[in-house]
Image (cartoon, rainbow, N blue to C red; front, top):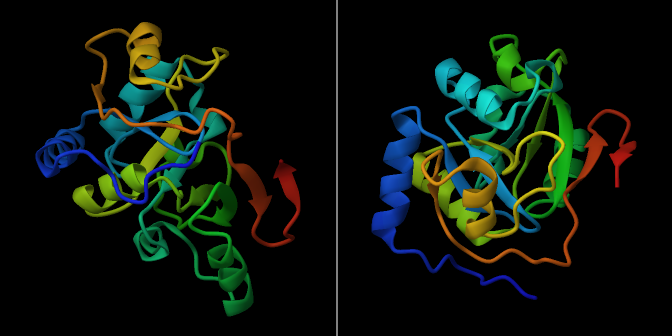
Length: 192
């Protein structure tokens, strides 16, 4: 299945979702392979709500997505041009990099790590949501811990409840796998 090059959601739904995020809400949205759950990465109350909803321990950390790398920059420690170019060469797409985080980044976001997992997805709706919000968003699979991730809006409702999150519906590529994870310093693949 090939994903559309542009989101087919109305601009009104995207604006509503962005307002919902700014008010501390959680939004479910499609990514390349599964539905993700997103919230404002600088709102500790929203981060706690998302972790509680997923029943995910804080120490594992979360992923940040963005429409463009520049939206991730405030969260990331500066690196040499070679490493930055290596990461950017894989985006947009299903590659997540573990990148040193700025010292101010909440432990609720980075977990017990000094790094932050970041990526620019290839899914146009996920990127449009970041643009509507005006920056990077949390991205974690839409499911409770230890469950299989949701691959449709209906599965999100079934797994998390009908009123737990605002859902932006859209297609996912059911043949796609979750993003691979690489270390930005070594280039080592941690999950393929």
